[in-house]
Length: 248
Image (cartoon, rainbow, N blue to C red; front, side, top):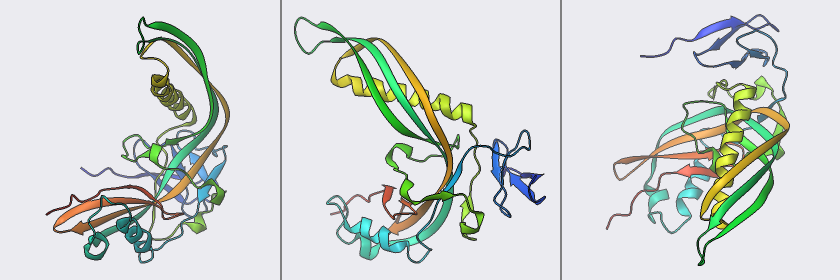
């Protein structure tokens, strides 16, 4: 069953601002004003935009370049692939700048006898959180091209593109950042210890940016099967792509 979009009035221009159930931050497509849906008040955090560099025709160029690179891809992939879908979506992200410190104790078992090791892992991150709860997007594989960041400008959104609203508020994004960094540090500590006994991760917030970034979702057919390729709309770099299995 399709979800029915609801709407509120933009407190800046009065135009209807549509949103779907679960979305909590919405942007007016007429004036670009960003609103917190629950309160109807203005969104007070920095809202930025990464500009898109491609149209439905030109986006085939970086897609073909991806198809020709790498030894795992069939040699005729770029020549025989047929594009069946090209969708530009501006995804909402929280960029959370933090300093993270994990104090840990663990057991190093790669020598005999095993020894107990204690230490501190400290790192600074610009941690990217996708502001959609159910979307399947490889956030950790995507590096936002921040050098192209501008203040959000609704006039720069193409008419054929889809702009998604946020389903995560500030506090939810911070908590998710803490959880994900703790898991990341546990992974990194596998280099030093084989078993973690204790770990306490503290995350100190520096700043947060809410931004929309252009992502191309491409579908292509190759020898009767369909595959997906996700491209960064600013740079054309591949974020993730399905590679056909070579047939002999």
